[in-house]
Image 1 (spheres, rainbow, N blue to C red):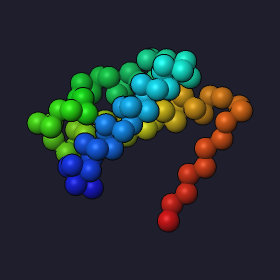
Image 2 (image 1 turned 90 degrees about the vertical axis):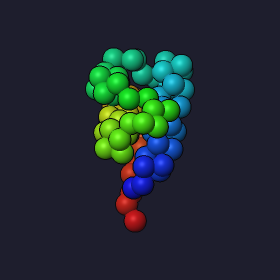
Image 3 (image 1 turned 180 degrees about the horizontal axis):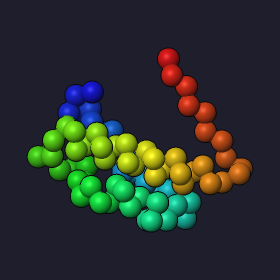
Image 4 (image 1 turned 180 degrees about the vertical axis):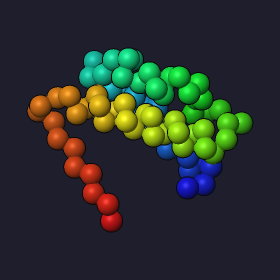
Length: 79
């Protein structure tokens, strides 16, 4: 993935995180690993690797948040 693609995905996942937290479906504690990275989606000076780690940490936090609910299911497929 190119750096600009990583930045874009990082930004989108950060927006999803904000929405999930706003709705009360997740607590900030579920994103501790992401927050510890200390790289924001608008940190264009950050390396590609930093943004990729942030994307993975956000994705894990979001998966944990939605995975705790019995009435939701998420299907992940790979093409």
